[in-house]
Length: 103
Image 1 (tube, one colour):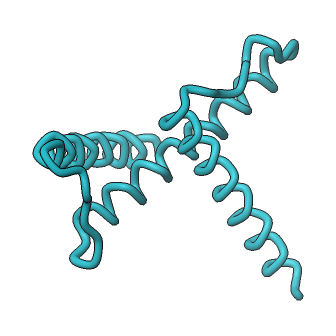
Image 2 (cartoon, helix red, strand yellow; image 1 turned 90 degrees about the vertical axis):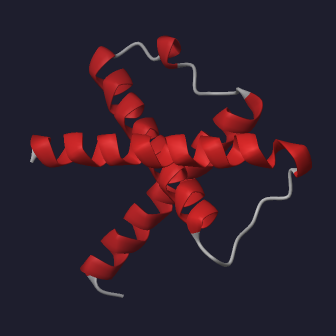
């Protein structure tokens, strides 16, 4: 495997791990205890890494929620879930526009 291939693989794995952590946070409330990290700069780096996972998780949920091949099975809660997906799409639009401004 080339160096580029290895870097891509490691980067993709890192995004999968942080998206998994975001999913765990959303479903259970468990999260990384950042206040226990003594180094302020390392704490900020971890926080940014976890925010990438939140963004990735949001993107995947919204993408799957609006795609034709996926549906929700929440019964009477379906209306509230669709509203949540709509709000998630708005959040993604806001984040992507702020990301474009940073570049």
